[in-house]
Length: 274
Figure (cartoon, helix red, strand yellow):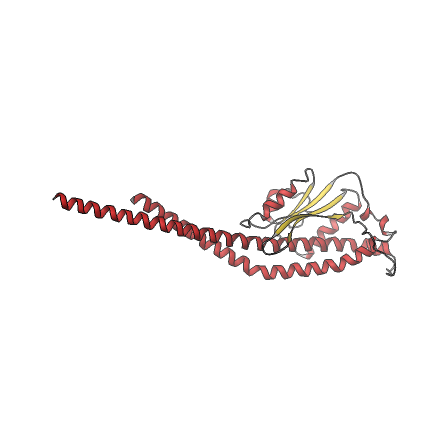
């Protein structure tokens, strides 16, 4: 019985330490949520502004001749994979990696430490992509320019991004977003908008910026999803640790009471024998 009490005391100490850790990480995640959401919404607004211009330009017959709208049959694919900088975020990273497995043979461009640890860094063009939290617009612009150049030169046939959609603080979904080639939307008319010097020149100039905005927006949304997933995971872990601590405390008290009862019984039995 004494051994059981000692083992339970050690277990309680371990679970209590875990509880303090999960609470601390949950508080850190909570403190980052507001800032991450603000960055995500700002990036969405920027992308929406570019999206309207791209919608009009892709409706133009001249722009449809651009290499950025060329549909090739080679099947060579490059995919940007955005994961987290650290773990303990529930299934956030695992869901991204599971989706990436659906594209065997694709050339992967990882963003975020977990993605960089898992995949090759051959296609980052020398850009530091180790942190999704600190991946800014300058890095997105560099990456977009290189990717647009390679796509226009026919080095690959389509470009996609695997990122995590922020639906709510409780729900985040790993998703594939295809970027290149660009496609014209049904029912969009190019009439009424005048571009100088012409549609195709403007189109060639804005596509790299549009791709950069799309990359930056997906990174910001993924990071907001990571922070939300971590807070949810830490809240759940904290509740589980608390429940386990209560159960272990009950077992410890019972074991301790049993040990005391046994000692009293032995003392009484010894006194009666005398």
